[in-house]
Image (cartoon, rainbow, N blue to C red; front, side, top):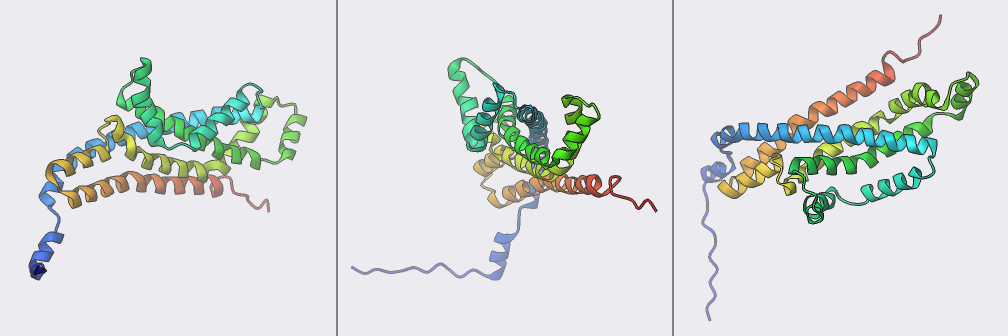
Length: 244
């Protein structure tokens, strides 16, 4: 039996270059759709991050005061949240809760999942800041007659927040990137729109480039703002001055 191998025809340089050129008209046509999806991603992400910080702050207070009943619960929550992927958590919320008769929208499910995941990371970041405050400051504040609540509010938390700022900012960037799995909840975010366009028009290169650019537009200003805020808090009005 004869076996023949057919080599692919040689392509001219112009044909190869044509394959590398992106369809700019397609990208411009669907850029507004990506912009709308970016606002959806940013809105749900901002809500989830804000609630995550509040959850982390509550857990930090529980750990700081060592509340007997809530301390083991907070520890269990942190371990469960940090050791399960966001995708699994969203599956449980979006597909599991309806079986128990609890129905929530995709946007609410996405924000709740991001809060559940981010709360543990925010709590760990704040915990590291609280532990960095020296014992002598606790003792000095107590000697001045401050209550435990006042010590935490006026002495411990301001310093802990400043120390925790770098990991907190890193958590913000991490959580924004985690929004890429919101499409499993039928949320029309960036990834959801990208999958739809690829499935409809097979414009993979153009769609992926728009996806990358959209995330960069969201994340680069946040990263730059985080660095600026960190420098401001660490070396701005709080830096030591020479009394002479």
